[in-house]
Length: 542
Image (tube, rainbow, N blue to C red):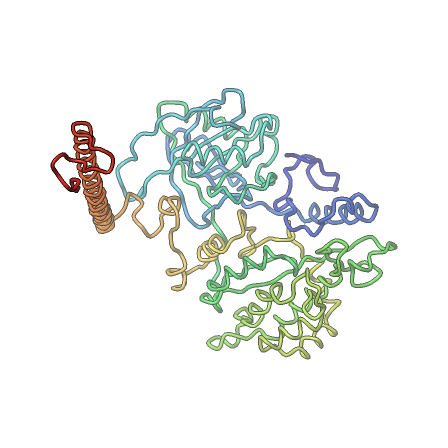
């Protein structure tokens, strides 16, 4: 949950940095980490993360009622009625949207909100009448206390979402931490199921939390608005940090590619690659581009054939591909910001499929010049131009990547603002579309509600329910399904009934004939070889 930092100038107590979990970390062998080299590398990577701890994504809570509470609470900027908080790295905050809701709170029964049975929320009244100020249904904002760390943040939020019908969660920090600025803290996903959480959560300080709790347990409802604002610009800039061998980043780029192509020159994508330095004087040749260990990358397969050096060189190659193939917007040829490389996207989204890490064919292996050259030729990229770029600017590009690191090796920043939450195409697209000074037409088709939360967040559909046309269609489908089912049942029932009735009638007839046969045999026994019926020459047929 918490770790202690010895980095000068950093707070002693801090929540683990965003993205601290090491999915696809490149360390597949725990035994290697126990070696001296493994510990040195791990220490160096940790130092990079700590030294570049992010400015967390601020969230504002704007109080609407009761008015007495609005007048009592002030933000850091002395704005009345505002509370500053820190957004969790898990969940899905809808940047640029403003979510109105009522705070729901109940005391814990001793488990610090870590179980479904630990607290019971009060029943919620019907939403208020629609008005110009409140033109959408109020959502449920569940408030819980951080407590004594009986469970992780993700557990508290998941329980509120799954069992308490929460659309957002506010977590109140501990009383002992009230001197800290919570906006400098980051709630991270430490047990690796943050991707299953679909609602945002905010950490606020103890003092503000107590004021909200006092009002929420009173007779007057506490109505607040959750606000996540992104700096706006005419052209949105998306910085993405990744590793050249990251399958997770590749899958995101594949999914985001259609939106990126639609936004075209209205979106400036700036790729960054995970490059770091290691202590010199030790043998890190396979992880670094040179013996001085100035520029290194993580080994993607432990002791396999692909090395960190291969990853670093491929990172430079991809940067050169972007540089050599980026073109200016023909409508704004003088604008340096309006540049885009479609060939770069084609290359990076295909590279791991065409040149995988694990293969016995050296001509199709990650990091080999033969494989990358073949893929560049396939995508219409000049391999010689890229090779010359690598020769001319290798050191400069590696230095720039090492010096411009993020809070995690896989991260996104939009208009200079840290994106908190799962890095997935839909969430990133929404954040980008909310970051324009004037919304671009392409965003109208890109932003489509996909869950109940979207509707409550003010999506294009009516948040109060389905339309009349939709209801009629649903009723028609239900009636049609029932009618077809009745016809099929009736047909099956009658067929079965008729077959059964015929069998029973035949069996009764057979039993009747057998009874007559036995009775005749008893009443008139014939001599051996003689006729069965006295006076007759033939037996009765049946």
